[in-house]
Amino acid sequence: ALALLTAGIGLRLIPPLGTKLAIDSALTSPPKPLPTFLQSLPIPSEPMELLLWIAAAVIVVTVLSTIVHLSSRWMATKAVNQTQVSIRREVFQHAVKLPLNSVHDMKSGGVASLIREDAGGVADLIFSMLYNPWRAIVQFAGSLVILMLVDWKLMVGGLLLLPIVWGTHRTWINRIRPMYRDIRKQRQRIDANATETFSGIRVVRTFSRNRHESSRFVHEGNFLVRQQLFTWWWTRIIETIWEVIIPLASTGLLLYGGYQIIHGTLTLGDLMMFLVYLTMLLDP
Image 1 (spheres, helix red, strand yellow):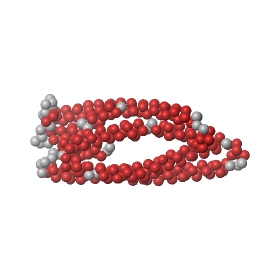
Image 2 (tube, one colour):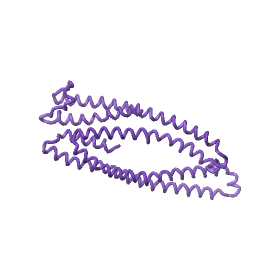
Image 3 (cartoon, rainbow, N blue to C red):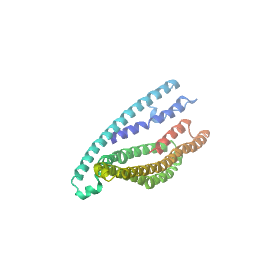
Image 4 (cartoon, helix red, strand yellow):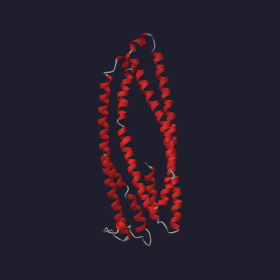
């Protein structure tokens, strides 16, 4: 899956080059010469034919990258599901061997929540610690190399945003991640208490504890809702900062790149291609 993912990202880094070729060599008069590494290929020189050739190449590369990416994600998803079954089986086999007092402390609903939610969630580490980080590393490194080849000064300007991204990420790690952990514990507590209530329903009715148990369930549910809403606001704040960074960076680099174009040290195609790669650089 990781090998196919690497190939798919490599293919996705190609289409922005088509934007540069279309602007500089097909839509600009007089047209700029093709890059050195493309001059040996049988590429038409007439503008309309060149434009059609670029469009066809971009379509082919995009379809190939999509197929490769879907294949890699399918293999990773299959691994996740197989891992979920394996881990749930191991957790179940371990739980039934625990001392009775340990099982009693966890309560039946808590054990069910652990096996269903937590043990299943462990398999998500395949995406969150292997698949997605590898995608980010390959895409970041590939975009960085291309940006350096286009204009190292523009690349340095883009990297100035990384401290902001790093700072907001640390806020996510230190502030928001524990909130999700608390939400998971509260949900597990609700499951455990609800299961315990229904397993001892005769005792509950004998001592007229219906209203008390219902009140406790509602109170715990309301507390869970408040936790989720509070976490939602923190998450939206961080995501909003990330959404604002890229447009601001693009605007600043557009001004600098426009200055370079006016003075003839950069082409319009280079600038447009650079802005696309900048987005690909900051996304990981």
